[in-house]
Image 1 (cartoon, rainbow, N blue to C red):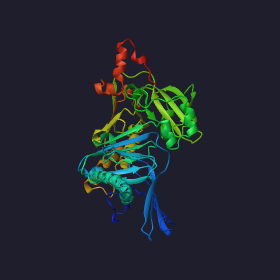
Image 2: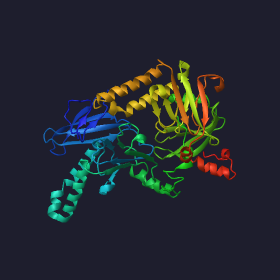
Image 3: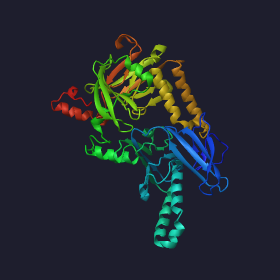
Length: 489
């Protein structure tokens, strides 16, 4: 595998090239023992970030005496909060899909259902490659002992040759196939050229809660801890209402936003003055050790009652805070529109729920539901986070490997966003939330007297009612139950 990091003149194998954002960090080189010829070789290590993913360390070894080469990827920081499963559908002749980059951790399971191929976890080191490179490496590993098999068992060798012919046809784009990367640690990644798998026609990304066995496999739980907790029972993963893939009304239980950073803490401190804090026993989301969850309810003026839940782990130091909606489900969705024309508008507090979408017509920007999760910030902070997220996810369209047209198009787009943040022109922020769980603070004493801020209700569509389980609540209401009395939190 070759490493192409800001080195346009380097000759690399396109099937196995690594395109990383080196930034200001320089690679570290050191001599180390070659395990092939036992002479000294050179190890190069680089700490970098994969777009739309996380920080990783790429290590590459090369021996000048025997030309032996090796590389691996180590993941820095914590495991993902959930496991991740990518499903990429590659059509015959789709060479761009074969060129998509893949980050595969050593805990990931890779399958190609059409070939009945499965690469189990821990059988390969973590690596950065492409879809084509992943299949090429798999074929190379299978071919290593093929000559010995032909001598010892010609029948089995013939079956493997037939399988390799199918694998080669997939690698060359001569047939349709599907690649599934399932990583319980959440440390694997498949590139989406647009930066958003939700809008990718051939790539589907699904997050899921890890089972106890998966936590044991990746080292988050000791076997004896898993056995002890298993005695308390575990929700079946296939349970459509309570399992990790629950749909419908369970979506309403998600937090409006996660409080991260000092800025978010300061914003919430304006509105929160808890009279009573309830402490509940719980578990850390990162290491699953015992931790205390603190809960209190407060009211944000001109918005609604919210429940703030804070979890701090003394074992690993992980901290998280969530804001959940209090009370019942709103009868209608809401559209909040803010005309941003003064500095005071940029300083307005914003709560953007995960169910909300954002649009800025002047910049031709639309952020779909769930793209950025829930946020507690200001108008200026919201725009900063959008720009930062786009720069991280669109590195493939902005770096040296991008075409001149892509760089020009994205450069003009970012110029519009930066002009909006600098208030070089007036612009409009529009937040649409089917659950009415988003909020922009008024500058006046009352939203009714704030001329630049408007909020209107709208009737949810049938699709939105089904997605959030509202149709089931309406059914209950028709049977004589009051919707406002149904508290899903």
